[in-house]
Length: 372
Ligand SMILES: *[C@@H]1O[C@H](CO)[C@@H](O)[C@H](O)[C@H]1NC(C)=O
Ligand SMILES: *[C@@H]1O[C@H](CO)[C@@H](O)[C@H](O)[C@H]1NC(C)=O
Ligand SMILES: *[C@@H]1O[C@H](CO)[C@@H](O)[C@H](O)[C@H]1NC(C)=O
Ligand SMILES: *[C@@H]1O[C@H](CO)[C@@H](O)[C@H](O)[C@H]1NC(C)=O
Ligand SMILES: *[C@@H]1O[C@H](CO)[C@@H](O)[C@H](O)[C@H]1NC(C)=O
Ligand SMILES: CC(=O)N[C@H]1CO[C@H](CO)[C@@H](O)[C@@H]1O
Image (cartoon, rainbow, N blue to C red; front, side):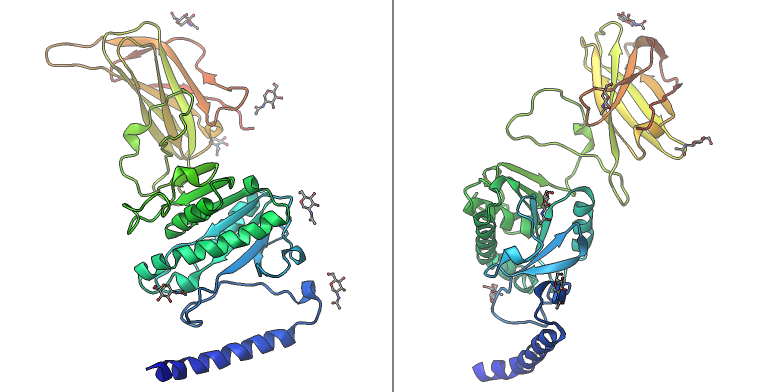
């Protein structure tokens, strides 16, 4: 049995040696000049019993060319800049043992907006095969990433400048790494943290709020987003669930505005007002609800173009008519909108007068926020 396995492995082993030799010959002794772009491994080629974790460094000066960092070799010899923040990306289960297709886009997007070191952790090798065996490899992987981070800390990198971004199963790896560092690393972002095998896991095993100074989990497949979109202006508690609106199609991101209606006088019933933003090509709607005996209702309105491209706002009062009781025929109040996040200046765009809205009738106004 053992011999059969060895025989099967030999051609691959020889091929790997040839590749190593040829790459050594292609380079010269100048480390920076022979450096070629390093890429993710493919697991079916390098099949073996080791995790073969690779750390690939990407920087703004060369966002599409990975630099292989060997944890035991001089990190100082690479383009790693220890005075910058460091983002470490950890992928999840890879059924087919291939490079995650989103890695390049994520690296480019990060480097486009921030001047940081980006390190992509390639554990394709241990993440393939059956899901449960990928899960079994998580502790060993987390240990080797922790070891790598310790090397960075020894170089003078501050723990708070480290941000781990873990996707799916990688989110729990990030949690484990953070746990090994006593929860003192700066930030962990879990993107769609994996559910299978983790819903009943202990705090040590899965991503939890104690794993870093700031821990966030972003779920893109959660249900019922919309009814939670009321706006509360209270101080954030230590842990909070927040909802981010998205559009139904790529690139999914939308702009958010706070819309607000302030009644001239309080009412004994709930007040509902439909707000619609129109640009030349888009239409987005939200419903403001003002509780009874309150003056103000606030709501988040997600729109596909920036607020400054919205030219018309349409308001519609939805009377609360019941069979036994008619609501008031009209309401009077003031409407304001502000792009989020609110900046220091708290720029609000208000219709400059109290408006009268009649039941179920659309009223349109020009909204002219200037583009910055
Ligand atoms: C080695 O790299 C340095 C820095 O990029 C460069 O100035 C030098 O010419 C290179 N030497 C060789 C032999 O390629
Ligand atoms: C590292 O980053 C800092 C801050 O941007 C910069 O001032 C410095 O020149 C960089 N060092 C190197 C070697 O690029
Ligand atoms: C919207 O249409 C008007 C009139 O055609 C045009 O002047 C304006 O530039 C357009 N705005 C945008 C953001 O395309
Ligand atoms: C805030 O207001 C100040 C003074 O009017 C202005 O210089 C600054 O650009 C404004 N900032 C923003 C984010 O609008
Ligand atoms: C709108 O109504 C409120 C409440 O009655 C009043 O204080 C405010 O002056 C009015 N604003 C305008 C612009 O008429
Ligand atoms: C690369 C590696 O270590 N893979 C291991 C992952 O876990 C499974 C299940 O324990 C092992 O069979 C693999 O060898």
